[in-house]
Image 1 (tube, helix red, strand yellow):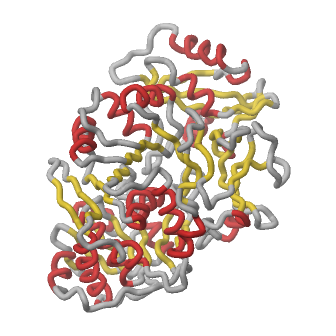
Image 2 (image 1 turned 30 degrees about the horizontal axis):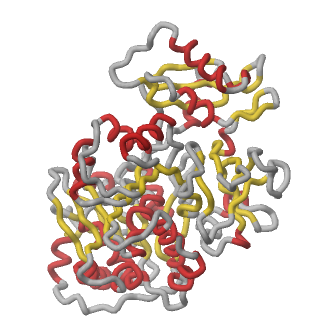
Image 3 (image 1 turned 90 degrees about the vertical axis):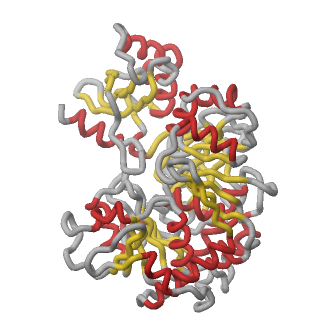
Amino acid sequence: MTDGSALLQRFGAADACAARLLCDDHPADDVAFTVVEPDLSARELTYGELGSESARFAAALADLGVGPGDRVAVLMSRSIELIVTLLGIWRRGAVLVPLSTALGRPAIATRLRVADVALVVVDADRRTKLAAGEGVPADPRWQVVVVRGEPGRGELSFEALMALYLDDSLLLPVAAGGGGPLALVFTAGTTGPPKAIAVPVRALAAFAAACLADGDRPGDVHWDTADPGWATGLYSAILGPLATGRRSLLTRGAIEPSPAWGLLARYRVTHLHAGPAHFRTMAAAGPPPPGLALRHASSTGEPLPPDLVTWAEEVLGRPVRDRYEQAELGTVLVDDTGCGPGTMGRPLPGWSVAVLDDDRDEPAPTGAIGRLAIDRSASPLMWFTGYAVDVERTAASFTADGRWYLTGDTSEVDADGCHRFSARVGDVIVTAGHRIAPFEVESVLMLHQDVTEAVVVGIPTMRRGTVPEAYVVLRPGTEPAFGLVEELKQMVRTKLPAYAVPNVVHVVDGLPRTPGGSVRRAALRERRANW
């Protein structure tokens, strides 16, 4: 692993320039991205081409009046144009506001308003999400640049703009410095309204450290399936690989499981990072082709269910390692040392992580569930200092003395320093004085051959106080067998204390999710309260 302080010296320097760090400092002939189309055709983009094309777009931004510090929103799918746009924004010294294409119009309107953007770059097939209504004004102050399609009245064409700037030496890249702005990202909003986070250039040190944590050899190829319209996808699929000069795959649209196996083999992918759902579809697609170069596989977003851990070891020949990340941090915990299934691993160099007692801002005893926190005084890679426009939520995220950043999650740490995720702070279930970690119960339910997803939430009752209730989704085509609910309860009863057995098990067709794919536990609690 690379020392965090050494990376910070490079990315946090007073003259740090994002365009140079992410592009120009790498060999011009090296491939930055291979973009795979839905028909599996592909195009490669070298660092030299990326530098030239992004310089042209930066010149166009300058002529449009976009200057250093101005905010530019991007509503685009994975593509060559996306990468060129991002680097053009940073070359100009402007600030990226990433927008996931999964967001609805009201959510997009909120982000555009809060960010006070000067310009929006949008794929033509997403243009309707900027139409007036549902919070989007009829006469917005921002300009609109349309990619891969005809612009509307008052809008501009990306392709036409690029054609105007054939000389890529027109503009020198802006050096904002390590403390200068790089992006304004928003949280997914799973625990309330989305929060705006100002990401400085020096945060690249943290993203680079996470990318290097799983090894670095000449010829490494990185494939991260996360949506770069979300903060953590931007960090891990775009910024981490660019900061380290690693070649990466980007796929336009969804890639079916069987072709995904083929891409792993064809492009000699060495590092695969995906959510549990992606690994599950790959497992359902049958065995992998011969000749895989995969050395490291990791997952995030939600804990890996036990059956996927077993599948990976049997089929891939290596485990899928869990990791812990946040929009406010990037990746801070990685299981690269064999902590075991169900753990998030140990802190990366440059991060000091602890579990704090519920009642005082001091580390809890080993093995006790408590508040997962970052020690700011001992974490040189810590870059988050507060939310951009939310003073109250900033204050609630730090201890009174300012030493600890409170992640909002709970965890426990063992004697070897391995952290095990418990739940969001508000999701821990306390029943009759006993604390129940939903993940522990969910892991047991997922051991049943017919269960593909499981979520456990706490429901208040008149007689027993808060009790655990479970929601399970069965494998496609499976009908609930007679006695399934009791069978699931018995499985929990044999592996966990009696108070952890779900009071009720609901068999449902699907679970409520955020646009980013996270389960909305609060929605399940609200649904139950309205029954």
